[in-house]
Length: 70
Image (cartoon, rainbow, N blue to C red):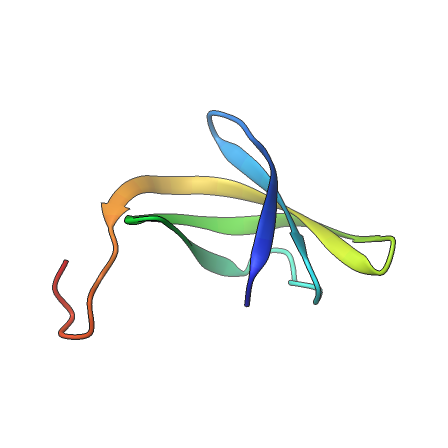
């Protein structure tokens, strides 16, 4: 699923998505060459889309390639 970043803080971020994501859902966020891990802590309707709050658990991991290695 694609999402747009609306805000970033030291421990979380706010994303806008086209579909709802249940609270507690673990997610991976890929941006450039970095993989960030977190879980959804909020999901609210927002003018035809959804705003989700993500609590970040780990950031800065290199993205995996098809072979499973970074």
